[in-house]
Image (cartoon, rainbow, N blue to C red):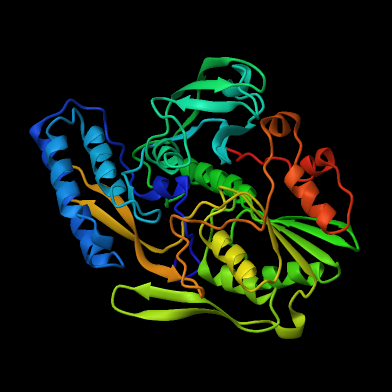
Length: 440
């Protein structure tokens, strides 16, 4: 998490603004290898100086980076050297400590989404008219392999990080199985948007217009959506903890007109600490100590002030899944510990830290700009628990089947509505909040 109202989890768009030069696919040489080594040393030093635990949780970071230094000898390109650096950082096994490589001037859209549902990795959405759709990839298909990776609960976070953020691919080689059918191989082509390398993104012109258009498309993905089903029920789908205090209070003002609020935090990867506090303060009639933030040299309570009589006092149901992370998990666990409502769905991601972004650069013939996101604090919950790596287990587990994704059904939301005393079929629930795709 972050101290201010910035994103808890770095998005794929975050990498886009880190540099204005694209690294070319050049042959390996001493210059490139030394560039990679310089970056490696700077990354190691930055982690050692800023990670919340000086002991690095007992992890031998120096040994890992020494091994990475040797691997750079075999890296054929600087890009390959950057992949080695990412491998070195991954060894810390911390969800909020991430290497942010120099940006490319190409934005990649795969056109499909994946998610762990229980122990299986499923394709949850495919963009209409994308190459993936044309090749026959469909929601509900089990993803058995992507490139050389076999998705499991243990490997999925690393796979998503590598192929979504570190190195999105022009082509994806998949092994999938549709419900009731044998496995098959697919190769899907991504949509590529190329930006001129030499244009300053912040001085106007076509590139700035294109970036603004892309950013607006991203905002569509993170926009709250609500449905006032009846006086008994309001459903609020919150994709990210990014709302202003005014907007948060406005939406809870609407919720107070209903007996029950279903807050859908599925696929919510987190957000800022301020929006988290505002959300918590609007569902409790008393101030809440969310937990204790333990930093490198000090600790302090994470507090949420109640809105008192203006807080929503009705029945609360919170939906979560394996892609609910960070602030979404903290909110859900707070509701659970305080016995304020019912959690439904699947176990959450287990990615909870306060993080800070550190911009870094290498000078020389070409300026190389990159960065690190580093965990600068861990959150100790009131029961002594740490959600990092463990997640939150819902009170009621409800998992959609592959056929539900294939047919557009949402049995989780339907079950939550039933708990609220409202009859809503899985088919009806599946149509309430259709998948939103970024415009570009």
